[in-house]
Length: 122
Image (cartoon, rainbow, N blue to C red; front, side, top):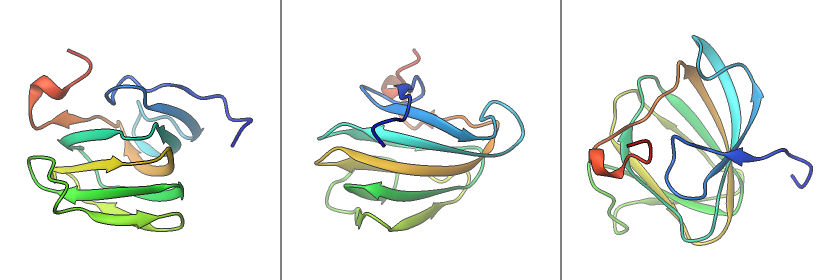
């Protein structure tokens, strides 16, 4: 993963990075991208217009469902674990160590934060 050309991911808060593998997330159709999150990272509750599959490649993440990030309610997932998120279903994520995941989703990809104040694009 050291040779991957990471770039800042504008749809996610903070210092998240992405690297596109296949497809185009701005167009209709399936795409795949690596996402890298720094240690102690959080993605507040949000939804997507289409279902997505996330596979943990490095580190550990917690994935939770609901309209507010709650560290008491998430599932802990280590390297090799995958989870599916349905379209328009509020969910959130956090970690404690640097984490890399593989996102497989359908474009056009977008994020709608439950709390608009959490949106880094504002």
